[in-house]
Amino acid sequence: MAKTFDVVLKHLVEQYPAAWLSGVGWPPAGPVRVIDADVSTVSAGADKVFRVDEATPWIAHLELQAGPETELADRAHLYNVLLRRRHRVAVRSAIVLLRREADSPRLNGLLEHLDPAGDWERRWRYRVIRVWQLAADALLTGEMGLLPLAPLTDDAEERLRDVIHRLDERVQKEAPGEWGRTLESMSYWIMGLRYPRELVDELWKGVRGMEESSTYQATIEKGVEKGVKIGMEMGVEIGRKAALRDAILRQAARRLGAPPAEVVAALNGIEDVARLDRMFDRAPDAASWADLLATS
Image 1: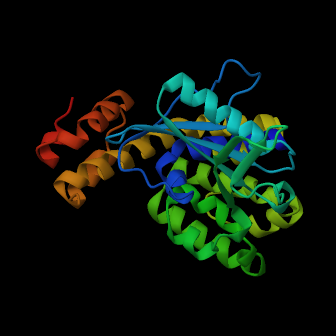
Image 2 (image 1 turned 180 degrees about the vertical axis):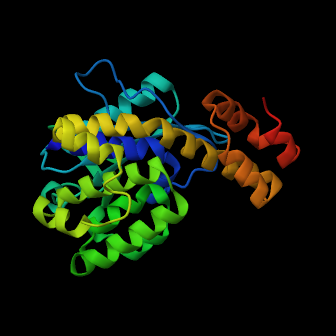
């Protein structure tokens, strides 16, 4: 089942990078884009790596951890050093602990090594986020990309039906259609990190859109891990468009102010991903909303 959670979470982070960076305490002041997480000299890549194109660019490196690992901080430090060397910019690293089983007193945000003589060999700071300590209400009303984490918090445990109901209401309002159903399916699977599948099934029974979700249906037809992967791939293009539209509005609003309703409607009607990419590139310099929408 670990692969199932990996697929779901990595798709979620990739679709909402700015939300996750804000969630770990690094709200970006410039465009955020996924970059290659391969660090070539080691056998595996980092979980998620983003380039933040601010006045002074930097890289955000996230490690999502659901189980215990004694050398997690050392591995994150290795990735940090290799990413800095490869991309030649500053790198910030954060470890996101998804459940208590992954926690350790060693994960205190500071990695310290001494040489045999007792001198400092290295001191490296990183950020640690313990999801169960977060406030469910803040996640339910905050960035859409963090919404599926709300049921994993301690203060959600005694009111799970209400949390799922509020989550569903928000998705129906702000992410209707196939991507909204995929987002709810992500929430459904992520809950398995904390709760028995039988309880999760019972809590989500009757939730609008779940039975229509491509991820959920693919899971039923193909099996859990293969089904989740197929379903996410079916939803990822829709999610990419939604994320691009959101990023365009955010970037342009810094220069042009809040977009009129007709601009949002026009943007939501654009399905050409290549055109959306070009609009994202133009957003910081557009003379007006009409000028931005005129991007061909």
